[in-house]
Amino acid sequence: MRCQSVAPAGVWQQKIAWLPLCAPKRASGRSGCYYQLLQIGIIVSQLFIQAGMDLKQLEYFVRVAELGSFTRAAVALDIAQPALSRQVRLLEVELHQTLLTRNGRGAVPTEAGKLLLAHGRGILHQVDRAREELGRVRGSLAGRVAVGLPSSLARVLTVPLTRAFRQQMPDATISISEGLSVAMQESLVNGRLDIAVLYNAQPSAEVEIAPLLEEELLLVQPRPPGLEEDPAPGPISLREVSGLSLVIPSRPNAIRMHIESAMAHIGCRPHIALEIDGVSAILDLVADGAGCAVLSRNAVDNSVRPSAFRVRAIHDPVLRTQVSLATSSLRPATLTQQTTLALLHETVKLVMRPPC
Image (cartoon, rainbow, N blue to C red; front, side, top):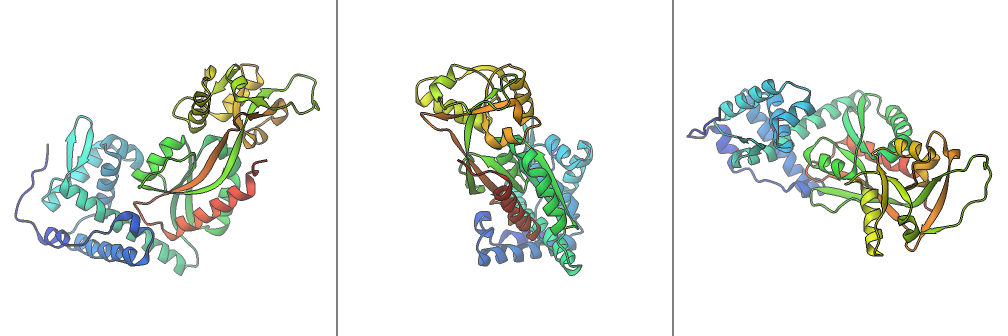
């Protein structure tokens, strides 16, 4: 059942109607606009308290609006979907507004919902900042940070990043997940991730991207039995690589898309033997003789058996991928998130080998 809007608007609606909205992208950067957003958050938080509303209901609404689906939001929030729907419905009743348009494809914010979404993000950010400030009184940062890593880098970065995080912020919590760069960039926008390491990140007004380094992609082949110290093989052209049987990730993996684009530019395309998502599985299949792979040296060096492979440089052209740190420009970063971002930057620079 849909909640119908009723008039007249209450005190909360009258006050929020004239509050100046600050563009989220500006709020994440410059102090003037940032503090304006904080003041808005404080005002609206007070109005929520006066109206007897639950911040948990606001969090539920924001997550549904961001993900565009009660089903996906219920999974992200770890709550039963009927309970989630009921809480959002109660919020609509309290505000005398229809906040979401429900349809067979999901849930879309109404005009009132868009207004509350913009302010709601500020309110929830204020709550996070308050928790952090309380943690600082105790002498440490607190809160939760969700980090996304590509599978090819997760094995390299997870342990040193977690160790540094726990040493510097023992009262905070870190959540690390693996995923495709395309999916993780979307997760930054909808709030499921706070920070992500991305391959060949696509420019977006909703995501702030900071280039870290470039990785050269190499041809990975099984090492012939008994040749533990065989001389390094010579380079191979990209056109020659296109004639080899490749074990390669499925689309829209960033490395897969980069390889296909580079080959298309010289008038050829890859010969794909197997599509496998997961660097470990790809390397296992290469070692078993199922084909060759195109991966970074870090992926090989940090595998279970790096001696099982030999790598060859690719030329005409050389393949390089851009590794970047990305955050959402829709929400100002908390101090805990800023500290985690700095730790991740240091960890990547320390652990990952620079290109030759």
